[in-house]
Length: 236
Image (cartoon, rainbow, N blue to C red; front, side, top):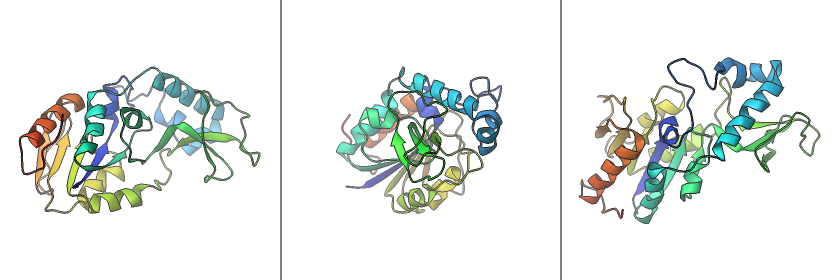
């Protein structure tokens, strides 16, 4: 099986109803990023940060995977699919994708503030001030905040370097280091970029740009692969 590596961003989850902070007003649920998604925010007002992510979890329980998530899961019939996502939701997993690497953490998980290796799946959607890990320290969202290192960027780059096909979907390619992953792909492999605002990058060889939202773009891509396009036939 050919190895299909997929990089997904906020655009794919937006069609399920999950809001992205990169709206026109620059706010995320009426909060500036600096107030809720940085180590400084946690130091200054941890209760606000906890409540912000509690609301994000609550919203996650109210939405479902969309056709783009489902299409990626179906591709496992014909490809060795490895998904690298910038999203912290679990919509890929709920759609049936079995190999998902989260770059920026996972909304349904929490971790110890004393020992980052202590990671737990949260029972329910609410994390409260005073909820402690077994070592006695406060639990925090298992999220990579702005200004923090992205531990999974190294294994993600390795996946891209070994890809036979690369698909980038629903991302503006503005958030680094994730935005640089495409440049790790071998020049010779086919690459697809699906996003309404996608721009062709002449420095990226063998790149096909589909300027559509995730669900429509994935439908077009499935048809392209089904009709040959130098790739194996794909079941719909």
